[in-house]
Image (cartoon, rainbow, N blue to C red; front, side, top):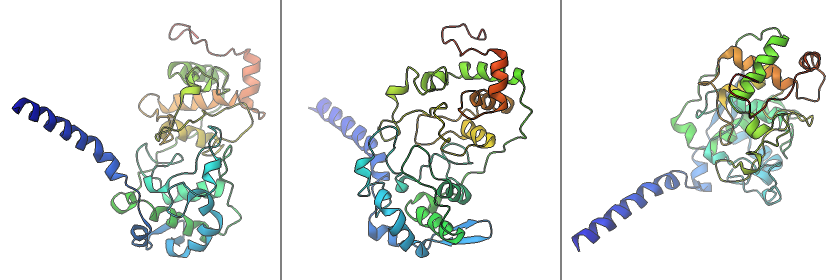
Length: 292
């Protein structure tokens, strides 16, 4: 009898431990959210205030992100395909596009840029038609949905070193990085989002998610400058299978990878011209390490 009770005690203890994460992410109610309406944002010399964004959020955002900011607006049910992701659940405080290290909160400027830029291959449009004040207020409104901002500060933005000159040697080196860190497993050897793992990918909530297709002409979600693409490698896209490579590749290697990925893209570029001159072939997943 004593042995049986001990087993039950261990099982109940394990169940309690497993339940802790679920408890910590319990959905907030309207009553909870009313306590955080004093949230503010600071974007340049503009101060945003959550209480001033209620009308803008109701007009432009609630249909997708929902009244409670949980990503369950009335339009969300129609966004099921991996290509068009579900609206972000702001209550979790987890964001793809950041200038800050993986696992940390984004800066107010990061959120402002996301609202302004929108996201290609999604139902999130550019909101650059709104005034700077309206966008800053919406940043504060987004922040009021998650308790993370009550106890955490945004991470310190990573440093993006000066961009080096594009050369054929750097593009070839970028192909080696692409092979070594196995970008091809998701993105495919030609960047067409058809790697062997592509169809199995899910986000942190278990929902299907597609890797980025570098060849279809769409804009990278977190910005299309070389600096933006560099930043993605070094911060990762939190909430997705795309990790940070800050501990795996050196800054100069990250630049090489940026240049190599440019050879996949539909837009004309110096990188594409150099790759053509080199008659550069895709990586061979079966080649021994360092022998691409």
